[in-house]
Length: 291
Ligand SMILES: [Zn+2]
Image (cartoon, rainbow, N blue to C red; front, side, top):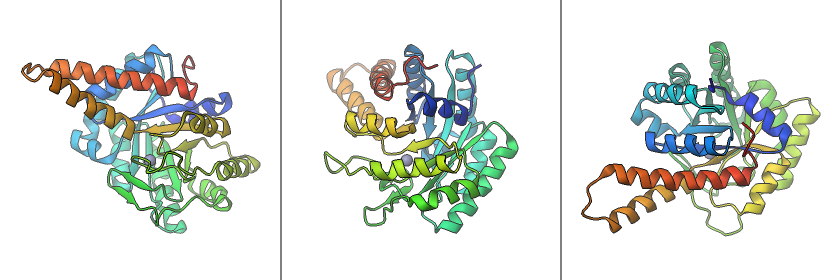
């Protein structure tokens, strides 16, 4: 039985100085690829969907597929809803069997962010076995329906982090520290490592043992990823990189086999491409062999 919620998995990661990969999927092939790759590496793993694919596939269907696959897997696996900015949809997915819910109320002011996040925490903790992620500051770029321009992006204020975590009761904390969704416009994005360190020290100083989530994990240099993990990043989100691999692999396969008309072979090529990339991230994050 490998159905777990993320908090315990990520507390272990924090203590062990590694991070767990949280990989976005939008269909069954991708989901199977993530799980197969994690099993090969004996790594704990988080499957996540953003809101659009979740709605498109039906959260109950995703929940049922997840439970079937996770129950048979020899590794712990979570199912996470990423960046839902609507409280009712967070509750819908909690009811459907997601084990982690992210309420992203970061576009609102501090008090409203706390109010909405707290509502989701109360609901999910009431159901039991569901952890909740909240965001403070805003991560720039586009992630599904959440679009934040560089001008609007605000980094997390460390002095507000403790109050946010305490008053919301969240299990996982996503502070904006300069990473971005989508493709980075520069080779060396400005990551605020000092800010991340300050936030973690302030939380620990108040006795708050809340795992930290790093958003915008695609396209960072390996050294930057390792530093984020060594400072205490415990959940590492990857979406854009996988989308590029999937679409490029599909295009290349069809271009090379134009007359074939065998969708199963396209699926196989995509599954292998996703698995290869997941293997890379698992090694980079140091979570191989931790399951
Ligand atoms: Zn994100």
